[in-house]
Image (cartoon, rainbow, N blue to C red; front, side, top):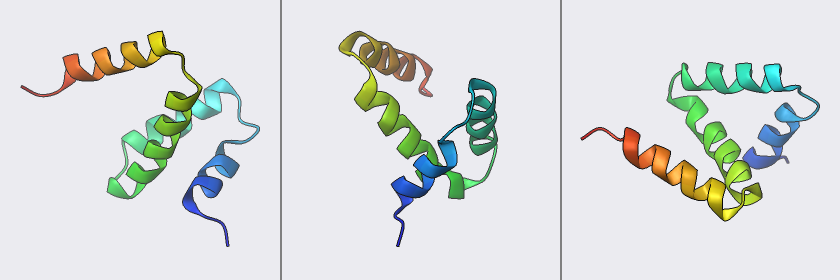
Length: 67
């Protein structure tokens, strides 16, 4: 049986940048059922990012949280 991460990775495989952008945009504009998939995508980005990129992600998050 395929777990959630494997299912997400399979969905993303062989997609070009435009298709990946569309998948992410559709997931963000959808209901809460897509949130785990976005979490898997973020996990992949985080693990493959260097410290500078991780710091940029954290700074972007912090500056955009509701006050």
